[in-house]
Amino acid sequence: VTALTTSLCFFQLSSISKAINSTEIPVKEKHARRIILGTHREKGAFTFWSYALGFTFPNSSILCWKFCHVLHKILRDGHRNVLQDCMRHYSSLVEIGEIWGNLHDRYGQLVTLYSKLLCIKLKFHAKHADIPANLEISDEGLERAAGTDINNVFQLSVEVFDYMDAELRLAETVLRQLNSSLAMTTLTSSQCRLAPLIQVIQDCSHLYHFAVKLLFKLHACLPADTLQGHRDRFHDQFHKLKNFFNRAREMIFFKRLIQIPKLPESPPNFLHAASLAKHVKPVVVIPNEDEPEMQDDDDDEPEPLIESVFNCAFVECDSFLSGRDLQIETLKRELELLRAELERVKGEVRAVETEWPVAWT
Image (cartoon, rainbow, N blue to C red; front, top):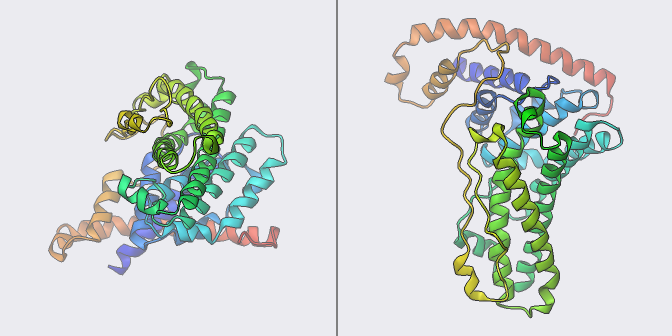
């Protein structure tokens, strides 16, 4: 069992190194999935951050972009303790954004916006612990999180607006850089930029629903004039989100990977309480299908092996013993490869510590 645990850790490290690098291709779903599974296995993101702190973030904006993408994924789908582990490295995320915010680099501009979004996400969910980082919460749960104090509801709605603004700024900048060219979305360089928008779409669908529910609640308790600023801000976000969803829905890249909901033709009328009954929560659907592989990289470990090894750690002993000898031999070979990978990582960390005296903390 100890050997199996060690092997799983090596597999996670290998997946991190393959997912986060300076090659301009999107993060492969199988690598992200293994990293996410690793957070559930170890009940946190210790391994992820142990590896990530060895990255030379100032050297590659593409690496930083893919790092932010993987971080977004594990925040949404990883173990619940990932949030607190990431909060410990909040300053590192801020620093990444500041580094690339001062440079004229197209990916650097995106990295700055993405790091700001992730910082807002971390602070929001650290403050509102009842709302998970994937934003999947029932209406009753949202009611409890908002509480009965109308001042708290007002403040929560402002924070939801800020959260949505950060999501939309990132999405708009990505699409502007690509100039919304449908032909370009078939290129891996374009897909590298577009891939994180899947998580942005997922976040935005929930944030839109939160905003609608909270604004109807506010209008039931406060004068309409007091909430004019809230209505104006919501209407602005509504039209931006609708435009974003409509453009993304037409892009070839997203068609197989995500089903994007349609927003209504016009925003809800918060001045009429009965309009709440017409509101339909937008639901994003991720098809149960692996991503199409755009190019073959150095994936040496076959996907079925990883899944079977991971499952073996949690099944009963008799199931584990089935085919044990074959697994042992396979794992021995994989361990040799991954030990070499770990030594390379250690060397990189030592080089970073020598070159950058101030650690990423």
